[in-house]
Image (cartoon, rainbow over all chains, first blue to last red; front, side, top):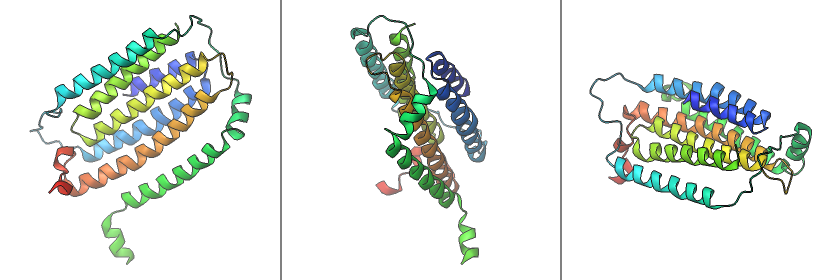
Length: 135
Length: 102
């Protein structure tokens, strides 16, 4: 998983978007991977008689995923995208200006969403005993 | 390498994420699969942005950054929920969470 996130950051850098690559490294490699590692370490009980990791609908899932990939791949290959290989890099100044002018509302909504996520996570992560103590 | 190569990589990533989400039984691994799918969409957004000559603004990259922030929020709340459920139910298997059905 971490290798996948890291190579995606490399691909963003190749696509001329170094700011997205940096954000990918910080958020995914730095934050989300550590979060998931903590979750796995907190929840793995280490019992030996693990059932199959896959659901009983594994074949249906594989079929659906393959069909989806096939459809997207067909759409991608059937469309004429032009054959230019020149990549337009991102100019940080114009991107920052766009972020705070044209996309100011999504930015503010996003900050509100992050605040809500923080509060929700704190509420969920509280132990029930703490409530009783507080009361 | 053209736009097509990036889009196909993105499609394959999305397919892997979709398969993982549908086929896995562990709630945490299902969350990881969701992150994978969000990453695939991000990759296609940035690729479209890099090869878009008609409207040279950076909307794709901005959307990718916004999606990343939403993914981070989703991961925190989702993992907190999963850990809370596992603490009460003692199992990460989603098949066991059938209280609402009964």
